[in-house]
Length: 403
Image (tube, rainbow, N blue to C red; front, side, top):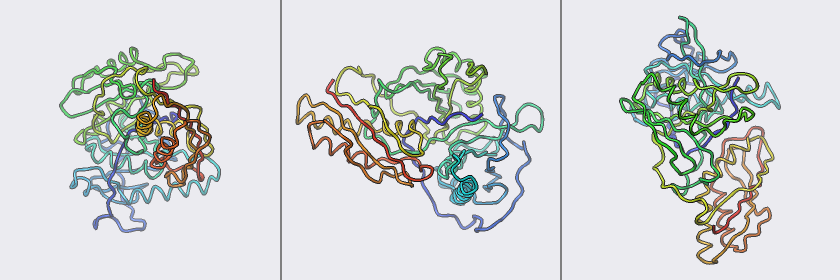
């Protein structure tokens, strides 16, 4: 069963390129797919394949969607940076629209299967992975060899949907954020396990590269730093896998497999303790010294109201990532009006393309109009994933006090 989409968002960027001359022209250009388990990475904590999910295949330089050549990855390798695979994006978006037309009113599952050879570098993997996410498929799986010869299953990893970059390294509310585990992979260097709570580094541990004990170490780390130990709590702890561009897919999948090894009982059945996201980011954010959450100006969120088909937790995480912008407005206001405090309640509309179409005051009591205007303007610069089924209206209250 697919895990709930609870994404802790980080600033990401993918460069888009025009289709190269050697990409397939529009139209059905069929090509054979690799054998079911030919060259796939191996994993033990797997689930059965979903026959309804479109299959995205990387076969040498070619990219295929459901057996049709839609592009290649040569430009990615030559540029040495992640890029959107335009042909795959177009094909996947068309499949998404066809599915929605055939299932009016039903929530789109957003699931796709990536069949990629195990020795493929993360630079290519991340490009294809995030291309699928941009096309509306954030719930992704890697096809893996599982157990008996010829047996192919899947291992899941959700994609991070890009949001705007935070205004400063300390963006966010450390006292309000949950702890998140970052698993950083760099070839021939120790695997770095970093727990963060907002901008604060809670703990850092290193495990030797390709150490067979990684799963046991992750279980130990979770037992010490977990956010959701209560068996009645169905929410999962968050883990984000960050891979250097030179990392091979086999090592990415090994990290996913190790994360899923630790389980707890939810609704009477064993379930992985982590919700896992595969990130385009290749390094942890620069460490920020811990600060006393009781000292200095504070920004906290009130009860958020969402009308429309975009998960409230996605909206909240993107807004929280940009608390630094709102805090800058507030700190400038404090410089003008000592002891300034109050609430700014913001109503904004997320358009069909994910941009913020309009922003207005939904009933604020912060007594400084300049600060309030600055905060409203900061909301105008946010961007979100494309909503399902039209626009989304949000009322988001923020409470500011000087601490």
